[in-house]
Each structure stands twice: as C-alpha cells, then as structure tokens.
Image (cartoon, rainbow, N blue to C red):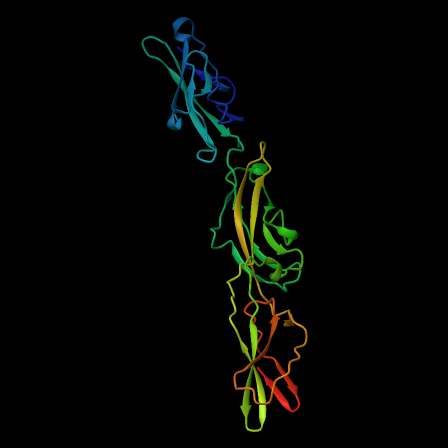
Amino acid sequence: MSRVTFEGHVSVPVSRHVHVSHVTCFTPQVVKVSATDEDSGVNSDISYAIVSGNADAHFRIDADSGQVTLAKPLDRETTPRYELVVAAVDKGVPDALNATAVVSITVMDYNDNAPVFTQNSAALRRAVAEDAPPGTFVLPVSATDDDLGNNAQLQYAISGGNERTAFSIDSATGRVYVATPLDYETRTRSEITPPICFCHVKQEKKMLKFYLVTGPRNHVTCCHRYELTIVASDYGSPRLSSSVTCTIDVTDVNDHAPTFTSSPLVRQVVENSAVGTIVGTVTATDPDQGACVCEVCVRLCPFSLVC
C-alpha cells in the first residue's frame, strides 16, 4: 500500500474577502484541497477532515471533495488569521493511512467598524479669549478605527454649531483652531440692565457736593459658548462616521469703554436744597462682562460732582 500524499504545496496560502454582512446569505467557498493515493479500489478512496486550527468551528470541509467553506461569520478584528490542519485519510483495509497539510487563511478587512472618539466631554471643553487671533490653537479631537487601510483612515469636519465660521478643524489631525475674529459680546444669551446713577446733594463745609449713587442693576450670568459638532468619517466603502460635541467658551476681554445713554445732564437746584435731594439721573452702559459704571467724576466750579 502507498501513503496518501497531497498534491501541490503542503501549505496552501489563501486570501479571500469575507464580508460579515454577507455570510448569512450563502456559504462562500474558501479553498479546495486535493490528495492522491497510488493504490486502487477502496484503498485509494480518500476522505478529508479538519483536525485542528478551526477555532469556534468557523470553517467546514466536505469529506468527499475537500472543499473548505465558511460555516459562520468571521471577524478580522478578533481573529485575522487561521491555520487549518487538514487530514486526508484513505479507506484502506486493514489499516487506513493518512497525511496532513496546513491551509493558511488570511481574513481580509471589511469596513464594519465606525470611528470611535477617544476623549470624554470634559476633555472636549475649552475656553478661549475673545481677542485670540485667527490661527490660535484651541484643542485636539481624536478618534480611532479598528479597521485597516483606508477603512481606518479618518477625516474630521465641523458639521454644526459653527456660527460665523468662527472655528476650523484640520481634516487630517482633528486639531481645532480659531478661524475668524471672535466677539464675546455677540455670543451673549442674557440681558444686562444698565445701572442707574442718582444725583444726591450733600453739604460739606461751604461747598455742595453732588454724589452719583448706583441704583439697582440686574446682571444675569451670561453664556458665550459654541457647541461644535465634530464628525469623524473613514474612507471605507461604505463610509462610516461618528460625531461628538465640542464645547468652546469665549471669555471676555475689557475691550469696550463705558457709554452714556443720556444727553448731558443740566439741572438747577436751589441753595437751600436738603441733603439727599435727587437732582437727576444719568445712565451709562458697558457691554463687557461684570462692568459696573459708577466711577464718574465731573468737576464744575464751584461745585464737585463725585461718584
């Protein structure tokens, strides 16, 4: 009797695209192995079997033809390569003879993973001063993709929340920059009631002094914020993408001088006016954050107007 020998190479490298979304519809053929036996009759009848390397029974082999097919979906990210040991056994009597060969199967990548951002919401929040010039770096945004090649290559873009195109992003690196001049005052979402200054008369020695006293002022905490939607897309087919929100707070810079909202105040007051008599009111505003307009000093001889 003669031993069973495989035709061709003992190790048969095989590379096939196996799309996970398709394997439930049909049984794709992976590779066909073949062996010969120089005996005759039943001694030359050969059957095939996978004896090792078939993790989780992903593959099956036809015992008569040697055709290896896929039995269940593959996941390259879990197991990118299989080394199947295939045995060919004859039906010799009284002793069956066998031979083995290794079939190497490489699982090709399929774009089945969307990008995943690596930062949490706290890491995607920054503050930038309103006087930051265009080109100022704000923060990095980063994502990863478990696929390979173009399926893992990412492109970044700002898809929402970028009013006045205030910010830009490097499509390759995900780094966010100031794109146009910022203005804290244009991003306010609350109202500030300007202070009212009351003029009081107070007698000191031989001089009447007029005092400006700041009245009620409603200063609601302002929100000067951009909520940018950042999208990371891969170059696979079909393209997959994910998005994340990036929060940028614009901080105030003292770039506005106070402005009076009323015309010059001209009033007459009699010399025997009681201390504390209200002569008139003037108002001034300052759009900067936390501005309190109360340091006004105008000197009118022989009187002094002091705030």
